[in-house]
Amino acid sequence: MSLDKEKIKHVAKLARISVDEAKVDSLTKDLNSIFKFIEQLNELNTDKVKPLTSILNQSLRSRKDEISDGKIREKILKNSPKKNEEFFVVPKVVE
Amino acid sequence: MSNITNQSLSKILESIKSKKISSLELTQAYIKNIENAKKLNAFVTTTFDQALENAKKFDNKPNNEQLLSGVPLAVKDLFCTENIKTTAGSNILNNFVPSYESTVTKNLWNNGAFLLGKLNCDEFAMGSSNETSFFGNVINPIGDHLVPGGSSGGSSSALAADLTPATIGTDTGGSIRQPASFTGTVGLKPTYGLCSRWGIVAFASSLDQAGPMTKTVNDCSIMLEAMSGFDEKDSTSINKKKETYSKNLKDNIKGLKIGIPKEYRVDNMPKEIDELWEKGKKILKDLGAQLIDISLPHTKYALPTYYIVAPAEASSNLARYDGVRYGYRSQKGKDLIEMYENTRSEGFGDEVKRRILIGTYVLSSGYYDAYYLKAQKVRQLIKKDFDDSFTKVDAILTPSTPSSAFKIGEKTNDPVSMYLNDIFTVPVNLAGLPALSLPAGSDKKGYPLGLQLIGKALDEQKILNIGYAFEKNCGYKNEVKKWWS
Image (cartoon, rainbow over the protein chains, first blue to last red):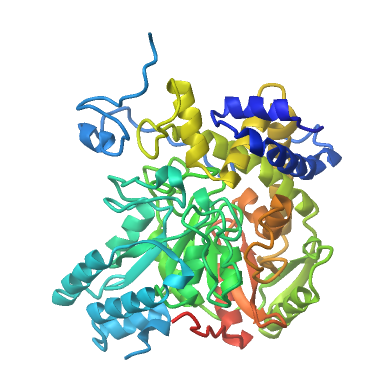
């Protein structure tokens, strides 16, 4: 299958990345060559194969549900591009 | 000792222990080298003042009982370092200063080492040439027009240029082994789960694994011992007894069975790679190993599988860069959604955006089964190929890369040709296995070439032993002319 420009713009919207109109053509070309490469997998019949979801021979550990960390608000806010004393600040969401 | 910096890590450790050199003198020698090697662009950040302080502290109260006593180390800028900027080679993290330390780097410091600086890498470790970094491409010390490999290109360049006695990288599809091969150094991707992923900027979480890059196999075993170990904070960390790889290093490989997979002889592979592989086989055979022809029939599907699985995981992992909690935020846009879109568009480079889009697409409604589920199934077949082979052999020998270091700019316009560089390294990540790249010779241009030893899961000791025996008998030593200083 091939990806057209509209599809790519839609995927970019889903990924929350604005795409420069001038770059859409080259992006379309690149992504189509990558998908052509990826689609070699269609040569294989995998009807009876179980998907691999973990390469470890162990199941995920569980731990006690107890608080082991916290009271680090300052550290968490430290790298925020915009904040007040207690919160991350974002552009207005609700009118 | 003016030439201390071209010694192996183990020699340097001996010199410190026997007080032939102080930690401060050693650190000053590396700082001098780094300042003279700015042309290579291997460093994103240097931490000289802090390193000198740590060196003095060590000299005042030396503790030589540790694995890495008094040694300064530069590390890939993908490892979060407390209060030291950590960029992952990206504009979007250009101002990020972690308030915590990655487990792997913490392990190094707990073993007596200290930080010298942060090394350039492909943006979010996505690349095979270190050309996708926001901080510019890194130069291979082998030649001023050559890429150092990627994504751990700053690491391979700094190591080969004597700017750090050893280093660490991360390997999602070959990002330790390919740059090691391109610079004539040793690189190990450990078994998935052996080294903690906690505090490493995530790319593709089911494939990412940190590992050592060093000048010798012995150095590699020392570094692996220092950095590995169970970590509560990584849900896929393997809980097992810690091994003493360096103490157990042995060069007797008599009777070991080495698999030679026929699928690794690919179309258009330079004759020199084939000859190198033959040379490697002969060395191991002469040492008493038994060569066994094997087949890994799904090898050619590894790269297409990887280019579904890795971008899918990356698109999910990189969703966190939203310009709200940390990192870059665009000032453009009239509402929250536009702020997200502009932040991510301005913050990420082209290759990262491409992979996020691929990943978003293969995970999107209506395409998931055709791409992502299909890739998970093929990944199972690739893993089974290795499982079957390892019932017959102890380790597998292959070339590390299909070519030597290529020219800067040579492959940047064709993503697929860039991806093909990882054709021999990617299958190992998909199967979660350990693999060691060893300098083994050079091509007719004099550029280094590597051979790869693949082991069973958690069989690092065996491939290190084979590598150790190989290194002693290979007779190849990569000499780097310091043209930049």
